[in-house]
Length: 126
Image 1: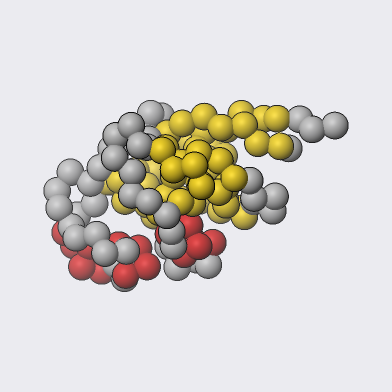
Image 2: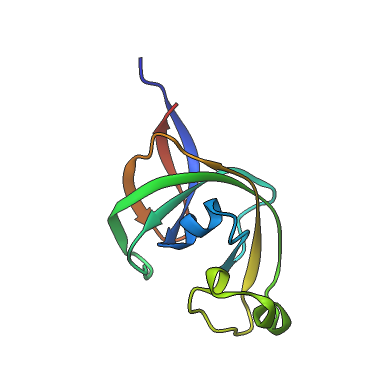
């Protein structure tokens, strides 16, 4: 019997989720704040396209579950100290935030799903 459970999801462009699983990256840089904190069991969906508002990528894949406990402003000093695995080509500019990712767990049964902008809802087999 398949039981579907609803989760919040966040799409992240490859290879960022792989770097998170390898322990090379423990923050996500975003220009917006999560709707609430803490944010437990957030599904990280990996996709290959940078998405603009309204865009979707039908080839997303569920890769990991994380908890977002803390968010803080991304400073220029932070940027200077971060390696390429964290920034992935992103140059520092004001108005961005570091989402601190904790309790990182790989999803064993990776499922194909839509990748969207923002926090969105998906259902996964449990």
